[in-house]
Length: 424
Image (cartoon, rainbow, N blue to C red; front, side):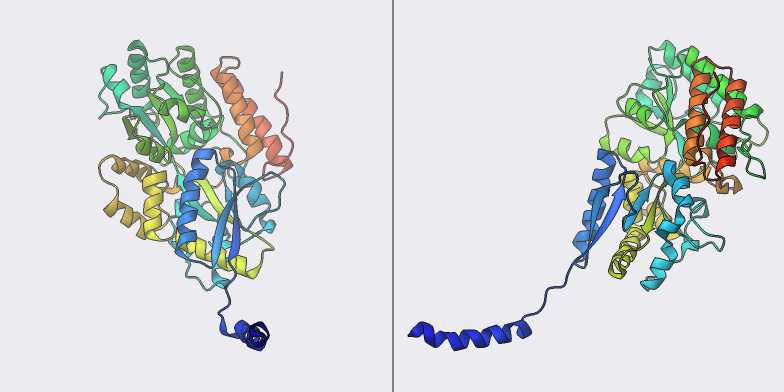
């Protein structure tokens, strides 16, 4: 009897409840694709979690990119992939357009010009965000320097000084006085820019087989023969060897400083990339390179709003300061750089100013970079390896690299054409 009496009341409640209870807003999922290693992906995950925890409308999720997949909402593109993505711009939505349509304040012209190279259209509008940029510098193991009788407060400024240091390091028992990561980026693109020579002519034809590049490649071959220079691979393999304390000097991305500083396993010093002091006008400027954030085309309107909010989050000065301190990346805006100067760049972290100083000048804005054209980069590094191992004279190796690289470039400006095999 009591149950029957409750039925009318329950029915009435069922009718009223949908109108009286507030509806839960749906969360928009945003996928961010990447090809980072485990350590770097974990760092990015922490940043994403901060964004997700600050608001309830959007949830950014990291997914590992598989070549051939359609672009996701957001795509973190490495320096090595950039030319391929530029060639496929139609598959992506310009960043400035996404921000404008979402009514989010965004002025790409306020970002440092050296970071925008290759990521903006003819009018200067950004189609991707230069979120994780750096430039090559020289890292030293301070303990190894002291053991060799070298002053860690006065690291080598020139390649001639670096050779003298390598000699003393070798004599003190170092099995790896010097090593390098990213060979084409450091020893062709930035070696050329820093010493005031070009990697291509006005028509875009490669010509990095001039006197400066040949001399430098020959010097590296001599170092390798003397065991001053130990080569570990084409990517960041040398970073890991240096971080483990195996090597005394390393040329690599300035962003490595973040990981080295955080681990505190190694007493590290940072200095400018060495230059050749017998070249008039050197040093000049290095170049910025790194990861950029691209927005996939064909996504839903709500997805683009979420993307715009995430980009605005990344541009906040405090987030930029954190990216500088933890990951070693260059702040994108003057406000962020000023915040980093005032809050973080003290003591050890102050050494990141080295990277800022290197980027001042017109050479930093050169758009053609062999390290950003995948097939050309592979050719260049193959020929560098042949020279450094003593198999091919430096001049012949660079001549072949230019010849093979130009064949690829003529087949496709993006360097996506078939790479010609090395001559036997």
